[in-house]
Length: 287
Image (tube, rainbow, N blue to C red; front, side, top):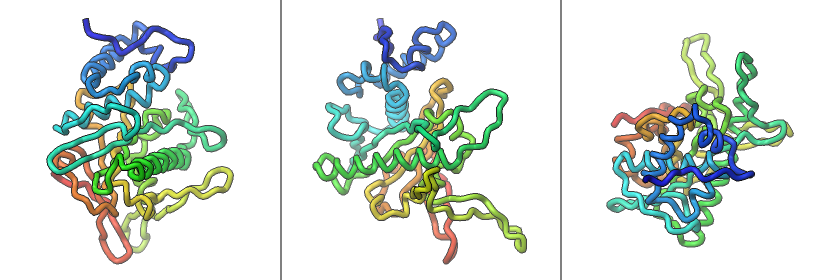
């Protein structure tokens, strides 16, 4: 009999975790997660399943991400401790490290509000940018510590993998949300003389307190250590058969390292090019 991903009920478990385990109407979701666990189990660190009962959304993403990366043919090495990044890939001359993160809705005035049925609130664009910027910065800081400790080498590729499944389904409504955080993409405007459409720059986003938060992360010198951002707006209860099809890959323009072709060939990949003296464009790389 295959081992279940789900543990018996505890008082402090994640609510969604408990609902999927106990609700007979969620049996299909439960089966999918159990299948995902069977594939992921060889790569799980000690205590993963117990930790997932409390931190379900974050650790679901680690499972879904790992299996998606494995699907495209990457050689994933099991993580033996929590001292380094979440995923290690060793293939050919490449050593790739991935830190996985799921931003939460936050607190206070900058919180991403709940999407309510039959209500049409303002789209929380700034709040989403703030949440993404915050977690990406946190993971960048973790990579700095890994490099300082010698766990990650300066020649390694460092990727931050972000899933927005904790942001009340709003993130999937804006396909350009990653670029609003990584490249300072503002609102679209139109030149009334030429009819040309383009996006205004927006390098900072204001918190309700008036504090400016950087929303052009790839432009920062300190982000040179981050090779790329892997992004997904996949929701837990709507997982497709092939996880990697939900991924988007944004290469840091400051990264001077090459990527294995297996990433570019199998994941929707975006890179920044200079279109003219004053304009840049993000283009999708066609494998």
